[in-house]
Length: 109
Length: 161
Image 1: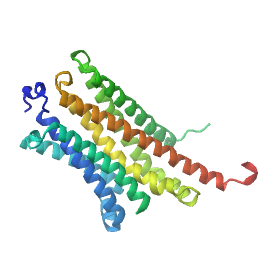
Image 2: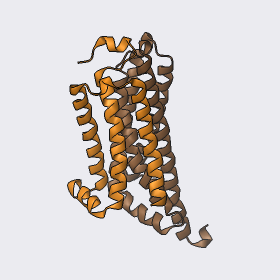
Image 3: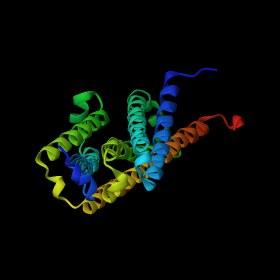
């Protein structure tokens, strides 16, 4: 699946780049879902109806999304073409958006 | 002395979280000095981070769902309602980011970090982000705890203060 040459050339293997991209997307999705369910009572009630608690459902959705996206990206090798530097910046940016975004949302909205 | 299952689960949650953060700092230091000799140790450190954060997720989730509601009521009626409205709300959702990063770390440490600068930077970034977000979540936990304490102190008879 992963080429050995990738490790020596300063590129990331298909699996690593795929799951890094999946993590960045999942982090952004989690932030959006957190704000959406806080703003929408019906969405929160729907999430709660699936596992008895909206937080539990959200965690399971995040986990499933991370694994599914990682596997799909690995199979399609989409993330492999992304420059590793951009991928790292994207991941850091996604976590920064999550941290600052969630803080501001719950402080002011 | 009485230690309830709620206390054990809550302290286990915090303990696993701190251990996961410390392990992330360990992985960060190992990645700074990445060489063939520490590759296995580095990967084991990453697995420890993932294991601790998963345990913190399960313990914290169980406590939050089963034991937190009465404490939430106390906080909201006390002088520090923001301990729930801001700190708990942000913490419970930011933790998912820490957990996802913790699951990503052992995947990234399968790379040969000593000969791959890109993989090394990725591992340094992931471990650093886990430590930062993890410690932020830990700090938020302390504020929430204090929110309960000041609410209880306000309810206590004045002669006991």
